[in-house]
Image (cartoon, rainbow, N blue to C red; front, side):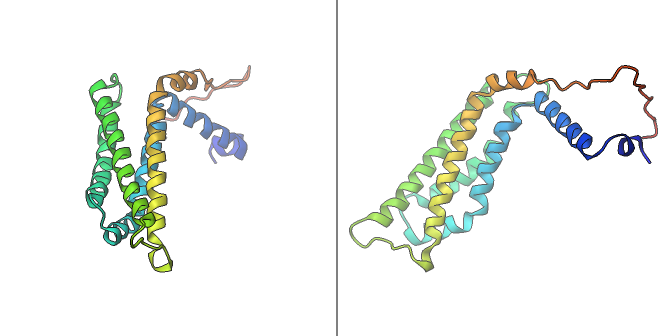
Length: 190
């Protein structure tokens, strides 16, 4: 039986995994806004059928283009994000500027799409009524709103990255060794 399983209980293993996560986060704090960007992409892409059905039903001006641009720039934002924060190199200001532009475009096309939904539902002449057969319209409205919130959250996290990165780096993640404890040599086979 290994020394790891006998020397510490579940609490010690959980504590060690949290410590390792913090060490990883200290090395790359940009993963926090990356998670927010991934959440925005997942929210939008997993509900794409509701958005497509809404586009087909309302058929407002530029709704299809907005839907296409949102998917395109959501995918491209990942690539640009990873290029903006290369490993062991300084932040690429050009890619960071391009990422900011893409996030602004995403919020813009979502706002246009949301405006088309609201105007179709609230127009005086022949409004679209949301009932059981067209429930996907309210789902699309909610999804686009959540997408805007996630993109704005990503932008705020990117702006605040230098501040909370310094705070994260100040967290003590060193291992305290008790006096008199013996450190065993690592087995080369493991």
